[in-house]
Length: 165
Image 1 (cartoon, rainbow, N blue to C red):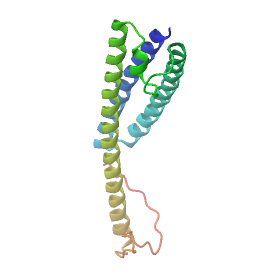
Image 2: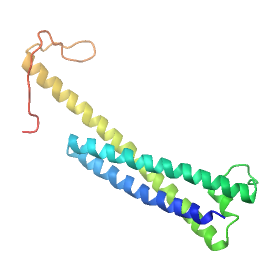
Image 3: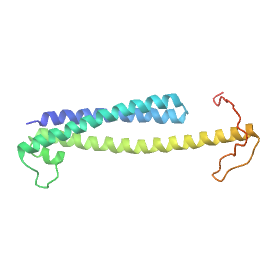
Image 4: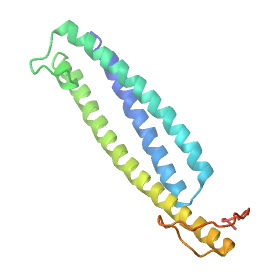
């Protein structure tokens, strides 16, 4: 059967989830330090990793469908790693179920960390918008706000401010 192939795919997914977690931790640190260039690079890296995870998930579903075709449909009707592992030898069943559990834990951690990083990025964005509004207000001299809380521009001033130094 293709259970060894399924096991390899699950191992690859676990390894990729580790890389996604590392990338999320790096992105969190980049947000903390307000390093926008690093954020852009890390987001690109994460997109690549997520594309690889997506490809592995498609391969996993294909292999599972082939295995299910060979062993027959599961009694519960739902195709799962557990239902496919039932057809495996005891040692391989244990490895498959352990990989499934490990993958679930890593995926849940990645979802939580992604939520935290997204919230931090939103907070950084709000902060930067506030800083820019304050600078715009100070430079325009308008000190008048629109309904949405934005500084009314009046006469447009061209300016450049280095907020890092």
